[in-house]
Image (cartoon, rainbow, N blue to C red; front, side, top):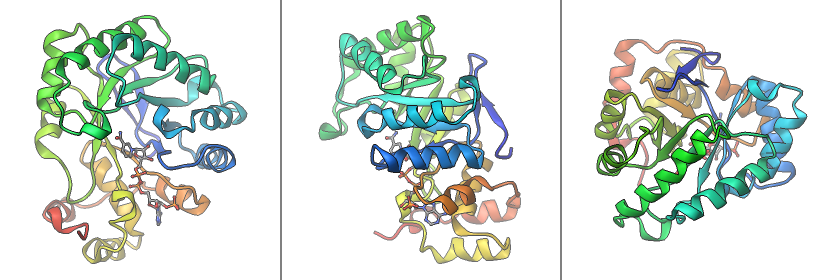
Length: 274
Ligand SMILES: NC(=O)c1ccc[n+]([C@@H]2O[C@H](COP(=O)([O-])OP(=O)(O)OC[C@H]3O[C@@H](n4cnc5c(N)ncnc54)[C@H](OP(=O)(O)O)[C@@H]3O)[C@@H](O)[C@H]2O)c1
């Protein structure tokens, strides 16, 4: 796998193997420039969400890029607090209006519970929302559907009650935080795992153990972190608003040896200081 590779979703849709994250990227020029820089650097996959309040700028940068729409893969997400069939449709329509890109490539339920009630059992509500997600997919206005932050129980509820299996689950994934149980479950069920916060939202950047590995490969710590995720079979979603970093994070065509992967696997929760 390298930065021009694709993962294949279980419905046959191809998704570029590195996505560009846009959480906490302010709408307007900052987001527009970040996405424009990412596309110039070679990224062909942009990850946004209605909750990030920057879909309009993402869409504008995509349209101005000079690339064909079908060369770019766009993901957005249904806000975590929307837990009704009608709400899902309404929000999807708003997202498409914001992006103004004609169609969406991947639409995810942002979380199984509202952010203000993490862990709340919304099984019944998620089943209703999933019905709308299936219809959105069947309408042809979105090429794939999935979830984010779902655990095994949340996924089983959707799979037992729905007609279409989610195509992806986007979860927090970085060296020392590899969420093995849910990752294995998804892989066994042919659900792509997308790894968000591959740099632990910046908190991993001072880690001495990873720095040593980076020095061994004459590369940088962020590149080791992103490459690690990809070599685990998980799709990394790095974010940056800094042009040099945007380029650097995409330039990960090297291989971490099996031995060094094992060492990085062993770091576990010591990686990010509390
Ligand atoms: N589904 C969900 O619930 C969820 C939750 C969180 C994130 N996500 C997705 O995953 C994406 C990435 O996660 P994240 O935003 O937490 O960030 P991240 O990629 O883990 O880390 C981003 C931070 O690292 C810095 N950085 C990036 N590249 C660097 C480099 N080469 N050298 C030094 N510093 C660097 C960035 O700074 P600058 O920007 O200042 O350069 C920023 O502070 C999000 O943007 C979003 O698309 C999804």
